[in-house]
Image 1 (cartoon, each protein chain N blue to C red):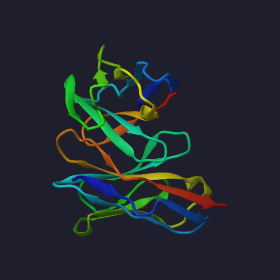
Image 2: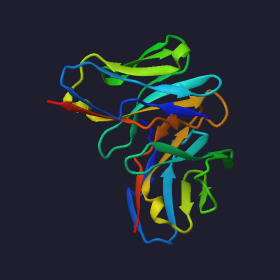
Image 3: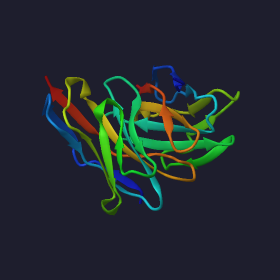
Length: 114
Length: 111
């Protein structure tokens, strides 16, 4: 079955700490990978995406993610978080053909302490 | 930047009533979707729509749900007889292919 797992449900960090959020997927075939952020009361915003090519992708706001095909993983990283990064982060996958529907992970709620 | 817009932002309805959630996708997109997020849970796929018909639907999308693109711009989700468990945030999305853009959501509260 298609699934996306995010291992950390709640993360609390101090400002300037480094962040790594795990994401693993189970999905047959060629996939596209995404990280979305949802600030309180707002819609899903794309942080970064991987379609093909360099497995290390850089996104907005200093975020990056690395696709490791052998591990079916797409972990999100940021070297130094800010208070404004407090939000919920969703990993998502879709197949590179067909309906392109997204399968989302359960989300990680990040709180950054000032 | 083009965006997906949804109305209303919040809808309260009585159990058993019909609701219609509205979405205006990005104009040159071909694929349209509805997702929902029950409070505290993950975002779940409901239905995808392409070429004026449903291309895929989930188990959640039962006979109480329907979608329409009545005028070539709006994309609607109808729930015929709402249940308490339909209370959720409903997101519309559109894409040209792999990358979807999401609306700000409609929070549906069934009382």
